[in-house]
Image (tube, rainbow, N blue to C red; front, side):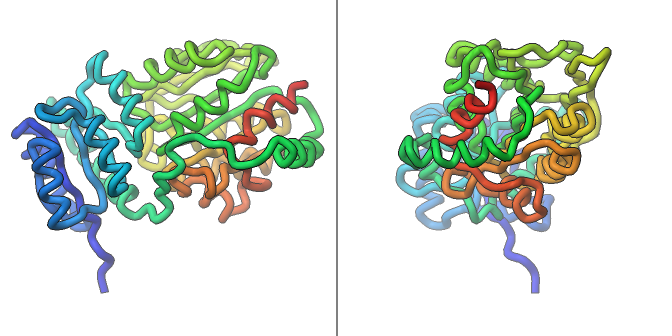
Length: 355
């Protein structure tokens, strides 16, 4: 008996893009193309006949833009959506809005400059569609960050967790994927300048992480940047892995430093959370705290386990507050996290650790 194929709907106003995406999806035996639509209105007609497991969605379209359509989909019939965006400054802003309104992932549109890169792109997109379609834990209700506990409940839980950490953390590491942009924003906006340095890997395509960093820099009380590598980590600073490179932390002359490098996809991702977490484990030993947040797949779970084995303190976002309970679930399954924690507890917990 074979597993059910993941069905996908393509929504894009470009005939060429629809053709290329159709060929990519149809080439994978585990995927099924239910249709293509040139605009959201045609997409609705297809959905009424056959609801897909996943939608690939263009942002800029005539008649109705992709963000408006995304809002309508999430409010009326939540379906995992992968946004495909052109690599332009205006679309980077729109991509962040897409995350805010429920997109699980944002990818650049396919380019056919050379066969090798096209094949890599095709494999990547198919894997994302399959992961999105197989995520039973997609929770649209958690796209809007909300408080889940009273102040008394939060303080009681945080005091208990604080007892488990013996030393003030030297470094905080955060990994996230689907649903992570808003989760990370929620955490950082609760922190102040005395915070230990923070390194973040959020699954995002090239170009978009810089815009994400600029946004967080405006909204938070911390200095947030897209890491360029060779930066000595400073308190009150946040370093985000660039969209097409891995980030790792090394120790040089007794100080922690970022290193950015190219390399193969790890767990179908670049940047990969596991790469960053593994480097934190070896560089910091017992002086780090790591959080694995909402996201599809398994990336980050093994790295989180490595941090725990080296004496670091590890936590995973709980199911109740995750948009996609994939990565945190895998961390809990293999014993990589000491326990789960609601999203709205993480910022206050970090504050307790540093005071």
